[in-house]
Image (cartoon, rainbow, N blue to C red; front, side, top):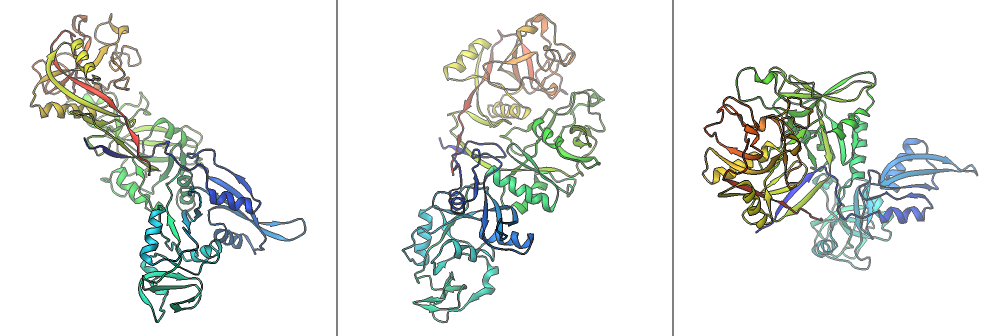
Length: 565
């Protein structure tokens, strides 16, 4: 079966990345600078070097401009240093947030290399040479870069380049070999043409010039952290988190826009698409608590929302909050939000959304709010990581909120609970569990494909042994036999240790799990509305006796592999 590929954003990864940037390391040693290597590839701080140039600059601004051109890594600081003999030097403190492959030089967030200084090539030959080295013909990203190339790649005469149309106004005519391929002539004298030094020309691609290649290295946590710092200088302070940065918008553009739609606009200045919904989990909330509020409070939209119950009456005043950050993909689970305090219950008026509340000197909290959709939002920028997996034959895959991929299969043979477990084991699987209502919808789709209606099917859940001697369940939500904890998943097939109230399919006169006659220990999936069920109850779980004969779901955990790029 053809393997599937997924792209997940904003998670830490063990991708095989380079440990250090070789070009900065060598330059730092040559300049007798102070070198500090990044602790690991996932560090939010890259390699750094503090190096002195025997050049006198006028002031801080002049020193900064000098360092940006002569030390073309990410500039952290530029200083004018007075030496013991009275001379002034310029000190550049730079960071290699990315890591170029050995033999390549990092400049302004890109990697450059001359594949062979002894060879000249046509434009097509140059493209092929760069492609074989994992790159492409060097691109002119800004007006200063030709001077930087000239200093670092000494002795270069003319090179092939690429550039946007904005450079067309600077193109000089050779008068002899003008054509379609863009080139940069550091020295104007060539066997086939003569132009002023440092001319941008468009010539016949069959002319042979020297070759400079470029590639964009993979984004790192250090690069993301750097971009966040630059964003903070222009807009609002960004917040560093374990696997990316949080960036705040000015407002929510339109009330109907999703957080992800807004974030795509907010994060456009970062020039790469690696954002996903911000999830107000405990780690992110703790990081927001560290932000200095400067004697004012801030309300922001959390992105966590709750569906209004489908039942009528006043039920919404007493239900338990079940907030999620929605993911617009039926095969990927929503992100559950557990940071809303239990005593902050929704009502009919305020139940649709929640907000992040930040007060000076207080911990950040997520609070239920009537309508937070017009508030500013937090966007999370991180690294996109591609995964691939092979779906088991005959199984249907689903991606859980923790990144796990699980595969489900429906068996129509009607057997008891214990026999169903054995049947699954024969296929190296276990009875199914779930971590979300969205995963339950995926199971319901499997039942619909088999044209089933108003049936119950075995799942791999059983009543906790600690709760066998009590009726129904404890009304105390914190009790180990509370409604959300009385059933436990077997065989480690699901990680959710608490069931949401809305998962239970209630009877016409009783709420489940009812543990009737203390003889209903096993869990079933309810598809449709059996005769005993309340037609207004939207749930999908019920407890019954384990000796009943039903169809069943089996599941396998699917191995996920990182795709190295």
